Length: 171
Length: 191
Image (cartoon, rainbow over all chains, first blue to last red; front, side, top):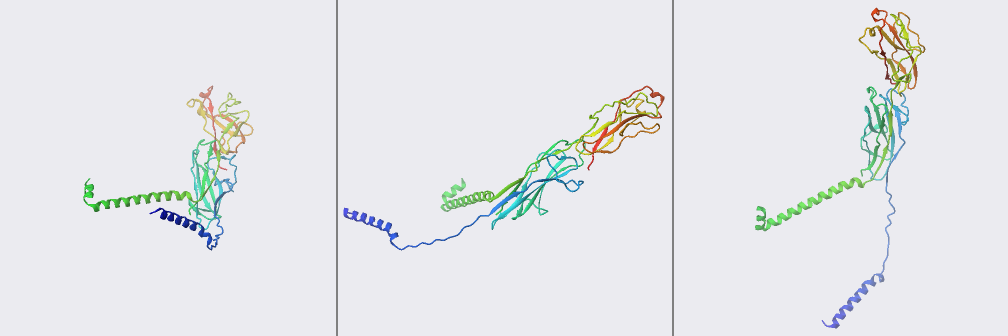
């Protein structure tokens, strides 16, 4: 290969490169766009109400509301703390479960605490499928055994753990 | 060792072993992927949490005092002039108070004597009864103790302690003395 041939090849390559770079603008072109609009995401929220303590002892009429800070619990008493939780959910394919978790902790002798959940007055499983607008009532029932004798558990403080309430997307 | 030797002598076996390894590797890989997908899936979706906080409740108490004492030493009971059939009574009524937080049903307990085996103890009738002013039981009648008097928390009532020497007491108990204790028992009552 002589020098002339090498030069010719290099020159041709240079021309091709120039053509390749400039060619796009020289020809017709047009553009259009696909406008997909906008999509919103859904919501999943849980709103807690205000908790209320009531004296629900079987021998007390009317289940009066009590002040937990001044109430003195005695054997035979059954007290109930209730709070409501409202579900707000939106999403075409949204499915969510409502659940509670509770550990009673250390309570005075003969005092017991249980948690129950109702929806529209009916007891539900834990967890349960929640729909938009559902109002769940979480109740902590505190009972002091009527059979308590002597001076057992007098002047004691019953510290109740919080009930964990969760709303979890299932899909 | 035996397998290795076979693999070396037969070319086909070698390739079969390597293929089997390949399948095993793929299975393990799939298992790892599945584990990650399952564990990650639970947390990847929306969840919201709240809590119901009941706080705390305090338990009540029971308490009963006589003249502001849980162990009151009776004063003003003149026992010097006892004779068969006669009663003596505390000069002023004693105040019994429910210092607890729950209603109590108050009854007199069983009287105990310092010398229960002595001659005098069986000849005495000790009573604690509800009265606003203390007057001894009429000669010939036996004093009776209070029973099931309901006291609301913080309220008081008055009682008198009365001692009678039984009308059948023998002459041998003359000049003797004995100490006694009479308890008041308060039991919680439901409203």
